[in-house]
Image (cartoon, rainbow, N blue to C red; front, side, top):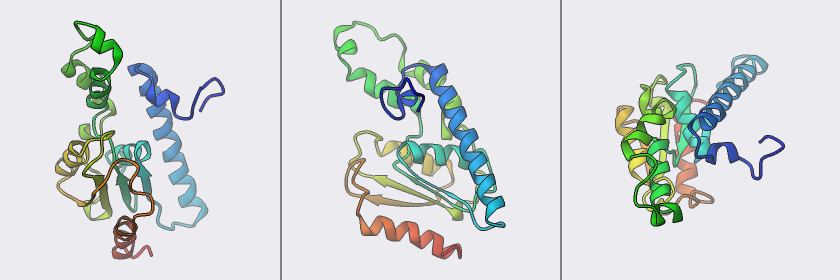
Length: 187
């Protein structure tokens, strides 16, 4: 977060396509540098990504940009920022008071398309991928990880009953992620 940010991740929550694009670009660049650095420092040990929410989104995005990740575990990942922006907007006070939104649903999806993991084919072999999704998630609705699952050719997916923050402390979720790493011979 920059020094003038009011909270961590503020640039990702800004309703500004250019600022969000820049934040995503920087995050992808820094994550890529970290992967390359880890690979160099460990002498070629397996390096992958495991992220939750925004981290799950970024892991999913990198899985469509690079083919050399040893694994990807993407938990409750948003797949379409334009769809999320629309969902949040229609619940806002501005929308409730306004007769007409600034942008249509289709315009928001188009504006954020370049930031969507659904724009890119999966480059990591799908047997190295695990999606984890909440059936009751009201922040990242189940349609998002399901769309990503379909788009990626149906890699492993683990559904849990609960909401966006429910993955914490859930043994079945932990076992699913560890199971992937064991199947790949990483653990």
